Length: 287
Image 1: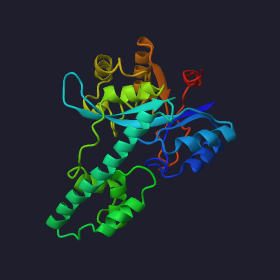
Image 2: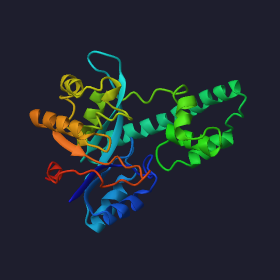
Image 3: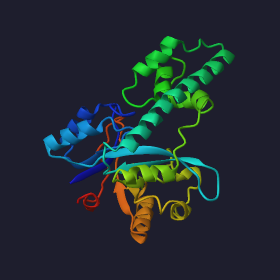
């Protein structure tokens, strides 16, 4: 059975396809067990539950939360955590995600103002109210920097998304919503779910690589700072090499944590179901 417990949609966040198309694609790819894990959003969950039930795919509720992680020693960094198997109608969780979504909109507006300041320096026409509305209209799920980058490419201001980040979006960034690991853990656990560290050794993403590339040091950080808050670690990921998978798996066994995995597919391109994940992973979620 193919398993994929890390998929994004345009319904809830920054995927390219709406939830109904994602489920159709999962069915075409013979994925038997999956989770939609949109960023700070439960918008796709109800549809995902009903659609997977209709086509015989086992489903577990999911969300990806961005956390401001403060290690005992060192500066705070941004990390992602995956919540699974929680009640999507939990009042506190829904209210917090709504608050985070509103903050995301405010953050995007502040970033656009900073970009306009840079445009003035470079004698580039500033983003107008209409431009800002056009960017918002391009967003199906949660509003983030990738949407601004894509619009800058479309307008011909930059050649590609990487240039947008290099020239403007890194410099003009505004801090994300300050969700702590303690709060994220309480939100998910109080809703009956489990919390999992996402892509801990992703060299190109939000991960512990920000602190250290050494796998032993990474798992030491997890041991010293996270064990009381998390239930598992995402071991299988497209940007985790075999050495990472083996090291993280050994760590989960040693501390009796759940090992999960997924493609982190945003449909750019469609890579759902391409990460080989053992069938035993599904057993962690079976009651």
